[in-house]
Picture 1 (cartoon, rainbow over the protein chains, first blue to last red):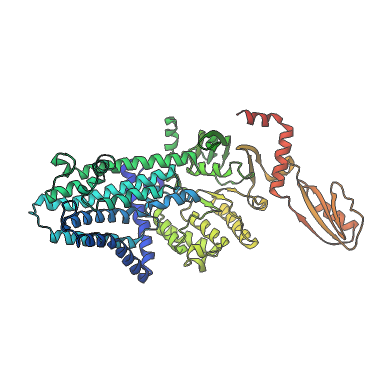
Picture 2 (picture 1 turned 180 degrees about the vertical axis):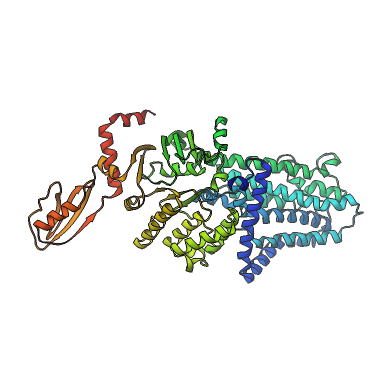
Amino acid sequence: MAETAYGGARPYGRIREGLRAYRLITAMWIRSTMAYRASFAMTTLGNFAATALDFVVILLMFSRIDALGGYQLPEVAFLYGLSATAFGLADLALGSMDRLGRRLRDGTLDTLLVRPAPVLAQVAADRFAVRRLGRLVQGVCVLGYALSALDIAWTPLKVAMIPLMLLSGGAIFCSVFVVGAAFQFVAQDASEVQNSFTYGGQTLLQYPPSIFAKELVRGVTFVLPLAFVNWLPALYVLGRPYPLDLPAWVAFTPPLVAAGCCALAGLAWRAGLRSYRSTGS
Amino acid sequence: MNSGFRGAADAGGDAMEGAFIELDRVEKVFDVLKRTGFLRRERRQVRAVDSISFTVARGEMVGYIGPNGAGKSTTIKMLTGILTPSGGRLRVAGIDPSRERTRLAQRIGVVFGQRTTLWWDLPLIDSYRLMHRMYRIPDARYRENLDRCVELLELGSLLDVPVRQLSLGQRMRGDIAAALLHDPEVLYLDEPTIGLDVISKARVREFLRDLNAERGTTVLLTTHDLQDIEQLCSRVMVIDHGRLMYDGPLAGLHEVGDSERTLVVDLERELPPIEAPPARVVKVEGPRQWLAFPASRSAAPLVARIAAEYPLVDLSVREPDIEAVIAKMLHSLEDAAPQLRSERTVS
């Protein structure tokens, strides 16, 4: 019974078990959300409207100016749409992780540790909020507008870049969520620090890199690799130069960067959980 | 830790029928940072569990008691794999809990009296459905176990109620059911009757007794309620300052601590203090008298004697408070073996 139930310590088995537990728990929350359809519709719409205000700000700006940092409205919308959609994916999948701090404080993390499923999956799926679709839909809408308004000579490679960017970008944001959560094991009310990197980071990426100071651009390229979510690959699609002198091929590295980020996030999570299990609280 | 343990862990739980739970000089040391100045901090080590050894056989029901902060919960957390021991060897069903926490989880059930393992905002039945899938319980077994728990714990009318709307007693029953759906071989209960009313307590105890008798489930419970122990456990372990101070039957605990029960006697009229050694009168209030007698003795001869010699209206027996019993026991142990205390402070 127990032997077949668990893949042991092999990473592949753990990931499969984690995804299974994640699916089971989210399915339960979706079912329970759908029991109150009206409430679901309202909160999702609210989520959509609140995030759409971000883009309204950009529209208002462009009613006064023709270009922002040398970029036209469709180009900025392209950056915005990519960042918002990638972030929307990550937020939908892992947005509940900032509740970990509360679980650590009130001791309810222990109840997750006695279940036969990886804790990361249980924390991530906890209170899965379908209303976060609002943010995702908003990003997709802006991206749709950008793609229809942009004047680009599309090549198969450039077309393939779009889903590639969204998936890699989503994965990069996911790892930031996980690293932030892992940090909460050390500093238990660090969820605001995490928010500044996730929500703050995605707001940064909605604007062209040319309007930011070089130091900041360097930071999100080499330290916290958010530039790989949309800036580097999107500027290749748009045929624009990157503010830092980087070779052209870096535009194609987001999947690798994303894989690296996920691996690092996994290690950080393990270290965090291990420190909890050896210190208690 | 030691990779040599691996082989034993892989051998599975059937290797040692005699000892289902095994602790061999298990320790848990916490580093506590204490603020001593604006930025200065002092690092201090606290031994929450200090070299504890015991074994529990399959099917035993054991009470694990001690004052607050004695190390009870820390021990339970190590037994479930939530915490990693700092030293010593620990096995449950042949598994090293901290190394193979998720594999062990399939075989154990845990009930925390203070916090629920149920999903707070969802109806009770949703939590059970999720457990069904998460623990991969075969459908027939799940239905059978659920029906049984619903019947015996009277959960029928509560299944569609969100957990947060349940009363403490209802929630506790719901939690116990949740911990048993996957047929665990051992059930850990951390304060299972805390805050429950008399009827709920009785119901929970009866259920646990049946579970142990019919399924042979090993039960380890921590409690502050001596009646839990009296009605459920043939064996008691007392822990204090992270050390195992007593391990044996409850009667022996009374002997070691020479604790006393109280006989409350209502007489027809006011009389001088009753003389019935070894009992002694500790309080007189009008026609009512309180007599203390050793808890290890039966009350029957005493009652018979008083009934024969005095005009008796009513009487009742009060059990000693568990804290008092433990305190007395710890005290007498210290008197008997002062080196125990000094040894502790050295380590």
